[in-house]
Length: 305
Image 1 (tube, rainbow, N blue to C red):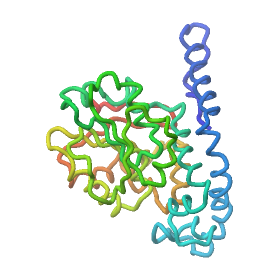
Image 2: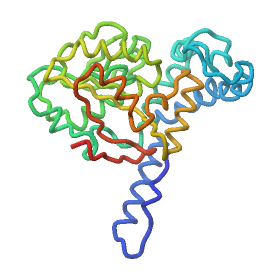
Image 3: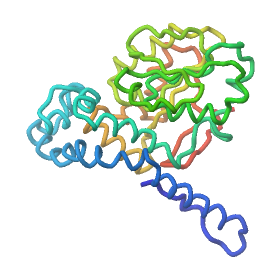
């Protein structure tokens, strides 16, 4: 469950505190009532719950060693399968659909990257747009909660620009026909050649943390090959864990991913983003860390300017 910022307190001399606190409470409460959040429950407590319960036995049997691959973790142990998490979810309906809806529910009540005070969309993405080209390609975007939110916020300012949602067929076919507006749905495997060339923005949200580094590099290289030098941008929206002062919600996600994906986010985020810089620095001549989140709180960094 999302938390309210404890720094927002009721103080008799602060006329803005009470409305701010109420706004935070209302936002979080409303998010819990959304269909996406409700749909996440059975899959989490069902299929993934068994993984949690089996973790002690798995660790003992493996000698408390890190999993050796994406198909050698607690999920495979608990369900006696050789499939990775995504293969298993979609082979055991309705777990796959519940997971995809969970990703939409997870975003409810949290700061959206395209809102004011987060990423400077108008200045960095919308200025200088090529008429009729792809504005945003949401790679591995699930049911499209990010790209639909972007359309709602900025759709009036992108002219005839395209908005593209990409994911595997088994995910795309779960989207109701009435959802999406002007968003194009495209079946795509992110390990293959990117079909949308020269888009203004390619966007990855909670994708790379599911895969080992060698597969992350492959995903990134496919995008890089499609980018137009001097025009295209790649936005990566991820949790990054610092050496000290990490937020409990971020570290809890790290532990969960270790159980179900055999992936450690902390391996990407040590020493103030050093490992992210190591992965990206040899492939992109320039990248900027915009900010970080502590749970649901957005904290901009001075390097964002």
